[in-house]
Length: 192
Image 1 (cartoon, rainbow, N blue to C red):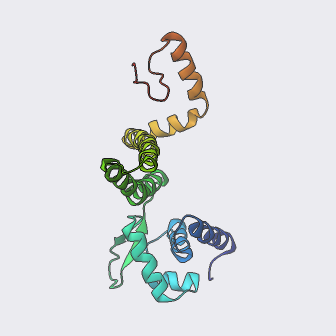
Image 2: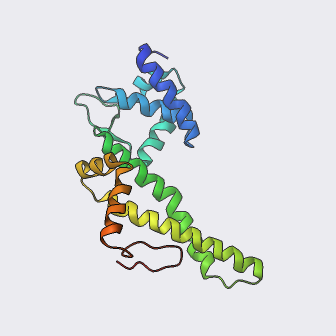
Image 3: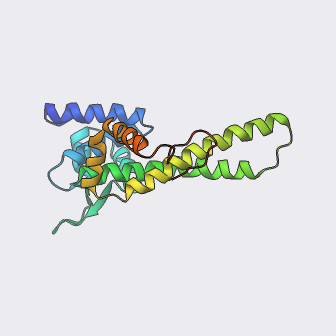
């Protein structure tokens, strides 16, 4: 790698983490270079910085574009393609969550809905559908929450996340003021 030590350490770590997140190590490293770059970069810049094959860089660029984590940036006087990442860290986090949901959660929900519509042919399938129904309900609740949170302005999202466990205290306080309202157990309808 042809990077300063501090940047190289971050890039190497991001490559390792990328493989744990289910993306190619080079894709993680390329994104890390973009994230820390103070200017638009082209494929040649990435080949030089990382010491990887141009074909690997080209595949990483396509992958990062499909995730909408980088975008093409015109550089006057240049014929090569240059790219930049989103500047706002919160916009990056939102994009990552949106893409993970679209690629992982949405297809799972589609399969669960299809399987829950099937007529069970045995007691084992009936039991399995019950388990699938519970999973569907849990994921549906989380995705509904995600949709609500996704619409929050960044400042409000930061405030919400900063509450941490204090949110439980607020819920406890609400339960004391309005006993039996909005609190539900398994299989009980929401009473709020």
